Image (cartoon, rainbow, N blue to C red; front, side, top):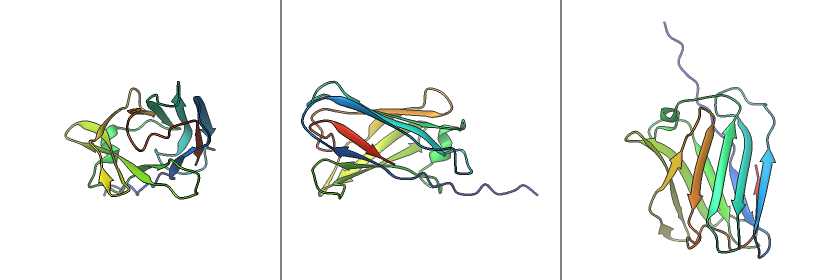
Length: 145
């Protein structure tokens, strides 16, 4: 009898606006969760206030993109807080469907076109939120895991 894979829930991460300007933020998370989706690092970068927001998420173990099937139990969620209050305005969910990874973003009564997500090696996710997109903070980023 084959053992059934257990669900792995990835901790939420939030990108929080700090102040006008450009910047980068990286947070390391300890290797403390059993499962393939244990976060290692989360990095967010912007070259200037109105620039695209580049997001890179790494895990400690390698895993196949299909682990994030929409119908499956695993989740990678990105919360976007674009103002100074503590509550996120937008929620991005990274999913695998039709052979591709993508991030759906919704919030503030809107849903946006899915953004492509790359999985360049077995333990990294990369995506870019356009500079003109409401979930992209108009300033520096801070990450909370």
